[in-house]
Length: 285
Ligand SMILES: [Zn+2]
Image 1 (cartoon, helix red, strand yellow):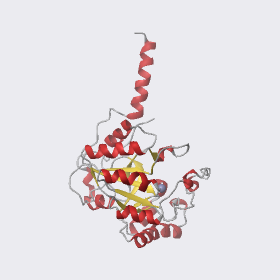
Image 2 (cartoon, protein in one colour):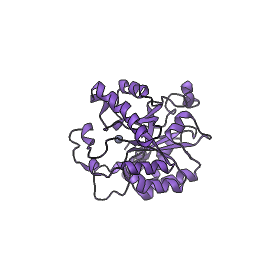
Image 3 (cartoon, protein in one colour):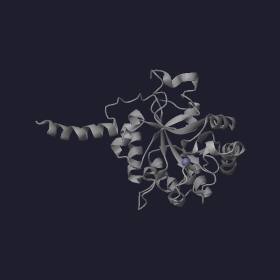
Image 4 (cartoon, helix red, strand yellow):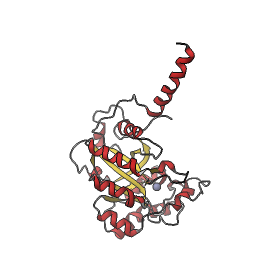
């Protein structure tokens, strides 16, 4: 075979390998997986934010696969409190508060006896927070996505499937927010949610996954017991030896206020989902 033909065959193999890192060994089942979702909906005509929308059929396939493969669904408060048995733990988390979490995700979660945590923005209506990340993100596409009403949030909680977590009052960009305002964004969001929905709120998600050390301290002082980031990966897996790393500091989690999550993207196929579950991320392309 000529060198030319060899390279023609080799290039796709290398591209697929770089994209999916299929050769990387699976991380131990004992390390909990915290999965990050936003919307569960069809892509429709919208070109923006494709990664944030997981198709409902694919979502069901993912949840069914987790259930069939022995993964135990836990909420973030159960994970942080180590209130569980077994070692294949998965926490499904949903950011922001999209209406399809009730209409599309809840029926699937109920079907497979799964649990989830919802990081709810208090002021989520008529609020185009995408511009707070980058000023040119002003398409309004995210603001136009239907959000959960308070009644719908009550319904999610009444189902026993979801617990509530904080995600600030307005989905602010924490590092550029004035100190007094960010104290309000972090501590008031917990108090408002607990009061409005009569439920404990112990977990926090940093908006856009963007935060400074100061913000971590404020989240702790506001009474949250843990916080998730958008750093991709599986905690306990990257601090030198994997063996025992998960039990660092006795917390059961590497740093309970900077937890990594496995990003579940609407751009991924089912194979990519399984690879993310194995190694915490998809690949390099
Ligand atoms: Zn968010």
